[in-house]
Length: 251
Image (cartoon, rainbow, N blue to C red; front, top):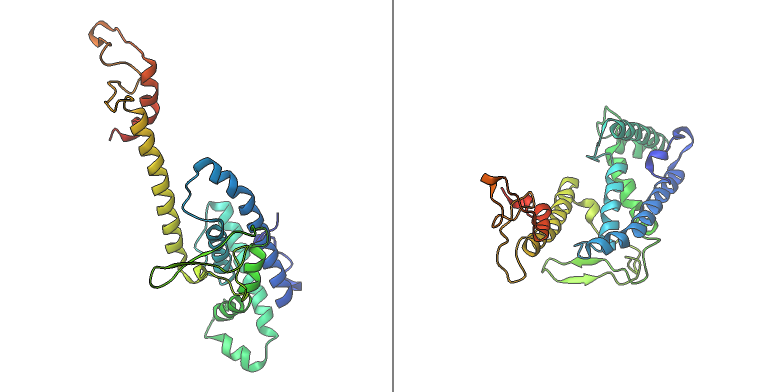
């Protein structure tokens, strides 16, 4: 498996080899998503995201990493890897910067005393994002279409299979949406989907087939037959469902 953290030989990477590394990482990320998405869809059946949307989210994350504005840190081990990757990318873009014309070097200095080269990285992404999109969508199906929502709310599909457009331009602008907003949308989507399943489960298992409430406690005892004072506890199979499904909704 190849990802951006595999970029190690920073002293021998130039503009072209960096693009190759980013595209290779995008390809394997896309391949992984297209392989696991059907399993996810089979389990939940009503995921709010299409395959193309999933690819667009990962595409945008790659763009944030390349441009030096990725917010994800994870645990200490993951944070260490991300910090090392950012250090390597700064070195690589420093080398790219040194090979520019003098005027271009002055333009991209941008009063950047920390040598992050943010503007250079931004423009690099803008120029190369179409190739990264092509790489990440390589394993998408021919009938996978990206849904584009216009200003009027009208939804149109990308006009080519594999989440692509005939123009060659990515059909998404998700890589220009702030990362925390993308994450919030993804969390909200997942929350609503899980809530829908949990609520349906509670309605189905916390009531009888006739819609009446089951008189059970959360220890699987039938409250109508159980006499606690006499320590006469009666378990009932009908109370198995509420034990596992209804406890989440007590408070």
